[in-house]
Image 1: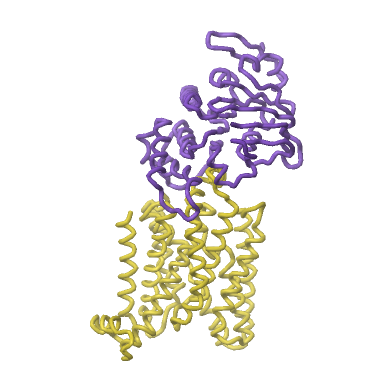
Image 2: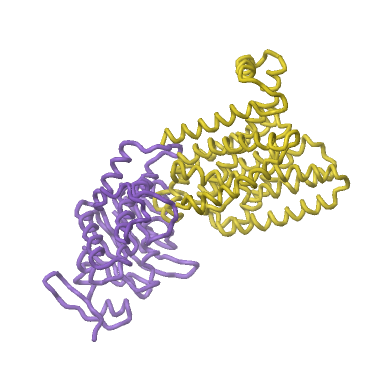
Length: 326
Length: 254
């Protein structure tokens, strides 16, 4: 098991290392090693590595890891492999709020914060609607998430149609497609407390998630407070998903497919799965971001679009031909 | 070990059982009998602390079981419920190891040596030592039932409650399961088991709790409880009992 986790960690490190070479200015391995060893040298190469490429790689890694953890938590809680971290309405709520903010002419730097707050707020409303007894009703959660997502999607569509300038519509669409362009250390620092809180809650939820593998009723018999575990999982996944939306807009597919890939490598034990999801989510998103920057350079293909174009066929192939279902 | 004092159980505001008084000692094998919907499972779950009595008290080890925190309850009482589907590809050992949940601190991720010992002992007790690496989904009904019992045993509780552990099992596997429960009782564990087969209850249980007409009709040795009139009152059909070399047996009359 440790070997498999080490292999996934190596994949993430490899993706990050390779991604350092990707960009408008060609850099040699010597340039990069030198810049990494002398971060405050002040040269152009150090600036490119430490102020442009490294923060972008870290943002991609954080987004991938956050979505993968959120996905594995919700899929485990609902015992439904088709669940996505955006099920709780985080993405739709954030998108609607950001679209309205852009229409209202709110300054662009405020958009991530608005998206985070609206996403988390939507998750709270969905959780309140899904509440039954002391816990969460899976069907109500899915119904409330899908309904509110549809409602907020309609608001986004209306905002795009009603946008007075093509620029505003373009900005809204850029958020919907997801991108790490222009993200830096500052953005990472802003979401760090919330992402850390989400990761901590996820770590605490892991033993309960393992018990839930044998069903809610049997998990209760072994001493799990199922209601409390559900709230913990929902809080963790909402914080992580909202943080990822604040960092990079809507990056679909990662939270759905990465838990499947990780499960294939390390099995269904939630402890190994959580660690595997962190590495796999980071590796996939870093690699996808690097490709999104180069495939149509000098312009960028939105990472959400790229992930869907490459990932969906790959996922379907794996699912139907390689026994991913097992 | 388990004390039920003047217990009344309501479900959805409706009174299901009343005036239930019983005292169950350590190492006893108790069978709960009664017709469908009479409240057998509800009574079992109340003994597990999931239903607070509307009146009276249910104590396990001297404490009101429903008032205990979930983990503490699961260290006193293990409940083996009727089968529930799940899709995860779990090995038998993984399933049984989940029974150790209540013995872990809330931040604890890893199993300890004592957890591994408990899992091995539980698998050995149900004679599934060689099945640890098998996928649960590949097991037969009887093997699955034994796995669930092993899960309850891994909890290392003095009391084991079972809800219809022999349903869907053929006569040989049912005999294996009931013999195993009999052995566990002999080793000192308190077994309380909902059964449908009156003769299984007569053959394996020390005492029988017969539910009917919204109350505990009788609680005593099989020979005393499985008399025609009491069973007729509980099930609403005429029954006749016969004495055999292995104890009392009972059948629908005619």
